[in-house]
Length: 212
Image (tube, rainbow, N blue to C red; front, side):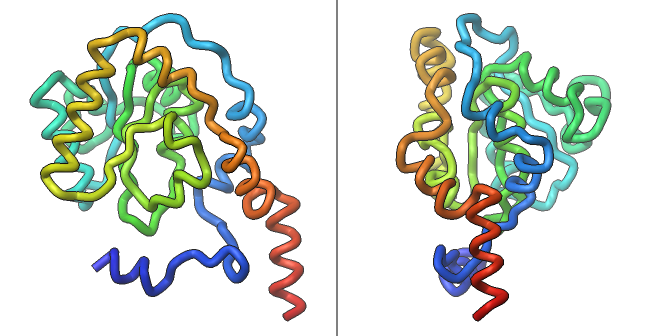
């Protein structure tokens, strides 16, 4: 049970290092400044939503794809339920991926599990679209919760609530532009980064751990 595992091994800021794939993707590509200073979006992408998944083991993510597809076609560019005539070329770090994503208003960015923090939401932000996200709620410490649509839990009621919000924003260009132009970092997010996620903060934590 992932929830029990998360409760047992919850992230403690004063004891643990945050070394997720997502963090190394940001620092390794110098994306932090790009995420801080983004262009103002004034036009609406031509397509509804995309989904790029190869690992078919996450039933929570698969369910979101199928449920949201009942409303409108979700372009699946990975090997799972591919419906665009082939996989999006290039790897998940490629500009080809980002160009594909940017043609859509939303992207389903569900993690493989609650224990993951991957590149998925970063690619949505780099492509200047709205992520539909499920994963550890720590993401709300890392990024502005108003910049994403977050699945709070895996009950049918929460799926329905999320999908209704997507539909509402999809049908109102003003609401879409308001959300997609939200800053990714609130003052609280900035402090969290300074204390925990910048290279300086990580260096201080590593030094402390090695000297304890």
